[in-house]
Length: 165
Image 1: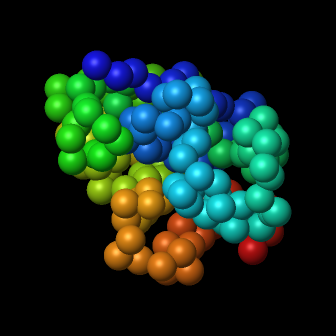
Image 2: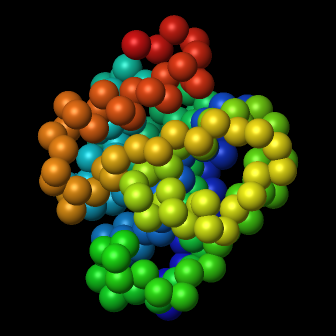
């Protein structure tokens, strides 16, 4: 049985990025997207038009500056390894409550198919939000080149506003 982390939420978030649940390396490091081959932080630096910080605290500060919140759809599940296909017995996080507590969130960006399917299975937002289905940032998703992923991920720029890009 594995469990996700607490959400990372700045003062006035506009976008909530949701993964499925942390992988083995992230759980060991106690950091979101800690596997060096996962392209998440590189994609987000491109979306936010910033240099990629190497320090985890600086990465979270980058999110805070731009109004990006980060969490996982799943609170817990059973899984061997890090592949989403191995997830069993999933239990969702209280995302509806987070969205109600932060009405400034207008867009939910779903990192990969599993995040999208689990969100739609378990979560019913109590108010309208835009859902943005994104290709997985995982190294296991090799069907798209980084530039192709980045083009789709940059779709969240409109929700962030502020002249990004």
